[in-house]
Every structure is written in structure tokens, then in C-alpha cells.
Length: 317
Length: 255
Image (cartoon, rainbow over all chains, first blue to last red):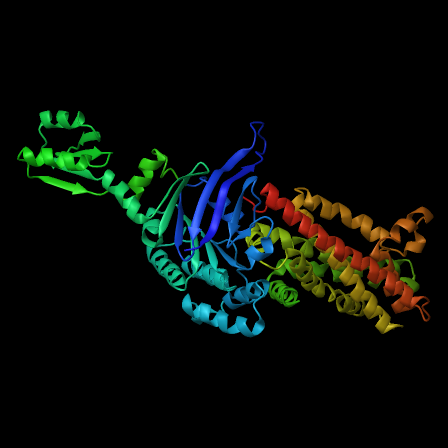
């Protein structure tokens, strides 16, 4: 599998306005490799550096240090080569000419992506069909719902037939149904062999569509793993709940290696939260050995994993 | 070329659907009446043509400065500037084409001024050299397109862009011989005015309307075309410079 996106010690600083405290570090030594055909998620809270990384990879911003390449082309020295092979989609209302129709928007961007006229027409029709906007192709974008605008954004990003598609928070502000539909479209794009780089702070989105996920915070990649590996982390944080846990047993669990916390709720259930591999298994053995039958277990969501890895900063968005 | 044509067409569609782009045309009738009332009050029928030409050129100029000048600013505010920065076609090609679309609208100032003059003061202008007038007007529009593209790129560089747009206009209109011919201004001002394409353009427009015989037409048109071209080249270079700069500073987006 070839590497499509690669960064080495990528760093980006911004000059702080009205501040004498020195530059703001948005990216701090990012090393990342994305394989051809994968959907790679970049998961992190607001201000983590996700958008800055996308902007560098799409040649909008120049890195302060380090290097980055897309499809083997340097994003600083070979911008023309990079630009004609990528597509970029932002989330939200930005990036569309809302007084124009959907078709006029796509016509314009097709020309800017050097799509020949003879190719552009059929391709635009096909894209509008694909994103479910054929019926509204000649309506002004300002009359569209958020979901429709986002699907038009996606069509715009695909109009140049890119090999790599960058999606920056593509489902932000969408309702759950619109998000699901958008994710289905992303899956279809991957099925065509395109590589997708997606930023999000939505755990469910990362879990649902990504082949691999990089966790980013404070401009640093904390980990890059496949969902299966994240699953091992999930096992690590698998919790055990016991109803009417005797006090002596609660004390025993508190003293057990690998148990992070033991919390009893007013409803009589006590959650025992391990934080190391195998600790949940040990807890369960003790519970069952004590003759307790009111037991239940549960896996943390990616969100919980995210919060554990982020050290609690995770969802302060 | 296809990108430039598409950019022109796209902007024309926007212009027709966005009142901000064409409301500047309302300057023309108002100023035509103003100038004609002065000419009429002082009993100078020989200056009637001047009173019609001035508002026409003023409208063309303000179209470049205000509406043409908003193309990049609007793209920046709407998040489109970043998408252009990531596109294969240089923004330096897109912007002049889009400003040119806005400037095409400015040519409506000609029939507006003539119509207003006819309706309000019963003026019937006998144009001496229609082709010269048309050529001069087209070159003036091209020149102001280049200048508009320069101004619009400066809106990214400077937070004082509006101030620049306001303060730049009056000296340019004066030195461009729009209010009165450059020949009537003080001697030391004239060489400076001759560096501005608008002075050549306004003289040619005036001569095309009023002078039975116009001398040195090819040379004067060539100078006007050359100075207009300089504006385009400067605009193209400046836009590339601006895009490079904002990719370094990160000021491409308005947060």
C-alpha cells in the first residue's frame, strides 16, 4: 500500500496578535502517514490543530518547519502538482456562492480545476445526482438546508475528480440523519479508491467511517491507530458494575492493581473502572467468586477512550 | 482561458443577483444633473459634453474601487478565498476576470448619462467619433479593471483598505482629468497626471465626443493601452504576492 500523505516533524506557528508572549504553536512536530484508499480520521477538540494541518496539506498554509507531501509532491515546492490532485471540503456555510445555483457553483469550480467543458457538464450532472441535488440543481444555494449545502460542498470537492479528498469538520452543524447520509457518501467515495482525510471532533463519526484514526491535541499527534487497536484501548477501559457491592469488597477493589476508581451511585450500583489491560477480568473473577450475581459490564465509547487519552480535556469543545 | 471566462461568467451572475454590485450606477444620473445644472447656471453650453463625460468616468472609477474592490474581500469573508488558494487555477487569473465582469456593468453609465441629460436638460449630444469613443471607453474600463484588481488585493493586506479606497479616489479622479481636462490643471501637476491611464482615457473620450478632428489617435490609444496593461500586470503580481503572504501569515481566513 503506497503512502499518499506524509508529514515529517511538521510545525506551524502563528504570530500572536497583541501579545508579547511569542508565537502560538498550532502544530508541534506532526509525523503522519496516510495510505492510499484509506479514510483517515483526525480526531481532536477545537483548537487542537486539525484545520491547520488540513490547510498545510492542501497548500493553503506554509509550514513553519518540517515537510509534508501529498501523493509524493511537496506541499510547498510543488503546489501546482498537489492542487490538481486534491479536493477540499469545509463544514458549515462557508465556501459557497449562495446567490448562485448549485449548478453554477459547480460549473465555476470545474473550470478552476481545469475540467474540460465536455467533461464538466456530465460530471456535474452525475455529482448532483449522487448527492441527491438533481431536483434542486438550478435553485439558489441560499434556499438550501444545511444538509443540502454540505452535500453540495462534497460535490464541489469532487468536481475536479481528486485522488485525495480533505474533509474539514464536514458534518458540523448537521442533524443526525444528514450526518448519516453524508457518511454514506464518504464511504462511496472510498469505494472508488480515493483517499479521504477527515477531521472531526465527533467520536461516532470517527468510529463509523474511518479506517484509522489519529488523535491530536495541542498540535501533537497522540496516537494513530486502526479502530481495532482502539478496541484494545476500549477493553482496557471496560467497566464492571455491581449492585449492592459489600463495603469490604469495595475496599478490596480500591486496593486492586489496575483499578482506577470505585464509585457507588444512589441507585445501589457501584462502577469499578479499570485502567490497565486485564484488570476488568480480575475484577470479574473476584465478583463472581464472591457469589454476587447482579453484575454487568460495559465498554467505553471512543469518546471515553478519547477523554482518557486526552487527559480529560477531550470534550471541552 | 476557460477559467478566466468561467470566472467572468460567474461574477456576472453574481452581479445581477447582488444589488451591492450595481447600485453604484445610481451615481450617474445624480451627478449628470449636478454637473449640467452648473453648466446651465453659468451659461456654458460648450461644456455640456464635459458635464456628461465626468459622471460617466466617475461611475466607472467608483465601480472599480468599491464593487470591483470587494471581490477578494467578499471571498475572504465567505471562506472562498481558502478554496481558491487550494485550487489549481491561480487567483491572479480569477480576480481580474471577475473584476472585469463587475466593470462591464460600469459601461451602462454611458447610456445612463446620455439619457439623463436628454430627459432633464434636453441635451442631444452629437458624437463626433463613435469608434474612438468606444475604443477609449473600453480601454478605460480595462485600465480601471486592473486598478480595481490592485485595490481588491490590498483589502487582504491592509485593515485600512476602506480608507485607501476612499482616499485614493479623489486624487486619481483629479489627476485623471475626469473633472476638468488635465490641460487646465497647474503645469507641475500635468506630468504626474500623464502617468495615470485615466488622464489619457478621459482626454480621448472627450475628444471622441466633441472634437471634429482628433490628432495622434493611434499613439494616444497605444499609451492608454500600455498604461492599462501595466495595471493588469501589477494586479496579477500583487495578487500572487498577497496569496503567498497570507499563506505564510495565516491571514487568509477571517476568524
